[in-house]
Structures are given as C-alpha cells and as structure tokens.
Length: 71
Image (cartoon, rainbow, N blue to C red; front, top):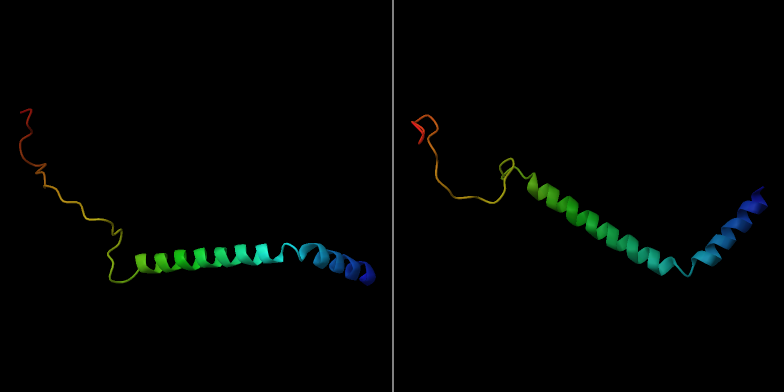
C-alpha cells in the first residue's frame, strides 16, 4: 500500500509541476484580497467610527407632529 501511495505522489508532483507557478500566483492574489478585505473591516469597525457610518446626507428635518398639509 505504501508503494502505491509513493507512486501516486510522484505522478502528482510530475504532472502538477507545470501548474505550480500558476497556483502560487493565484494563491498570492487570494491572500492579498483577503488581507485588504480584513483591513477594510477593521477600519469600518474602528472605535472612532460611529455604528453604521456611511456618507453624510444633508437635508431638512420634517416636523411630523404638526398639522398635515391635507388638514
């Protein structure tokens, strides 16, 4: 059984060696994306940032307790 596993390992290494640079490149890209997303989440949850902080929107306050325009 161990001979079969060794032969299978050698075959996988020989056939997979051509794809190794491509696999390492894609793994590096995935790691960079993961790091940048984790950093963005940390900045979003920073103690200085209010909860649900987004872009500020200017506008006017409407008094809902006053008479309605239909009255």
